Length: 67
Image (cartoon, rainbow, N blue to C red):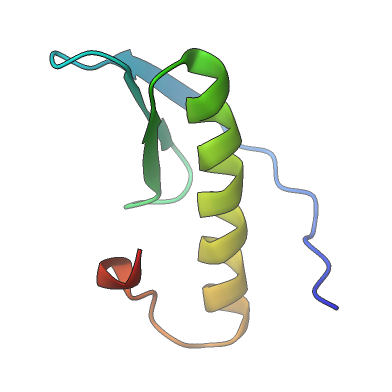
């Protein structure tokens, strides 16, 4: 079982030109996600942060092409 440590960071939500939203985690370069609604973008960035922190904690680079 993997336990996610509590992470506190500023999230920046942007409206996408094509529709929907994209969101970035300010304290985690390259950690971005998107969603059709604000709620789905927030849910997706939580998963992206989990994967980002998990990869860093395992001392391996994050493979962004795997998503």
